[in-house]
Image (cartoon, rainbow, N blue to C red; front, side, top):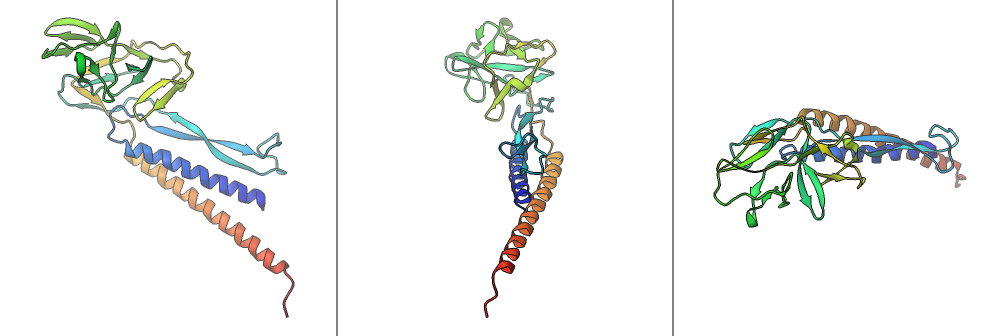
Length: 245
């Protein structure tokens, strides 16, 4: 009975957490450069158990973490010369403190000191450092990321990728850092820069809603199981009490 209660309770909490992850995907359906997350589950066993299926020990399930889907999102034409999208595998690189961070959100702007900044005010990096845009210049950017101001080259955007993207840790909704602290990125050779476009979220409203409905059904099933176990426990307790006459 206790084992069943434990399993139902852990299942309830896991479905609630999965629901939160799906809800965050939906909340960012219009966020530039957002990549959806998918929860994954892992089995739990009671302390001292050698197997999560040990019938002598309570077991359950928890959300073990999330996996980010880095597949391409749809490109939206804006016509803004500082709006950039990557078509293919790669990340724009920005300066976050004394480290580098990676993003697919190319809604850039010119900030103080003529620096090219991302939506969070972080400097956008070129292959040779921070990129500066001359005041009032007409900016064009080719598919290789080379930036021209009034027809003169002023640098090439730094576009990098990782062989194993599971090392990336999400910061906010459209920024990633190397979660290991020692994984070297490599130059992204398969990504093309599209000027005047933005890459939108790769989350799909219908898919996320279907998943949320499925998770809610599981949540309700766990609720019913807990209620049934508790009702049975109360009934057994009452029946075990001596009759009062």
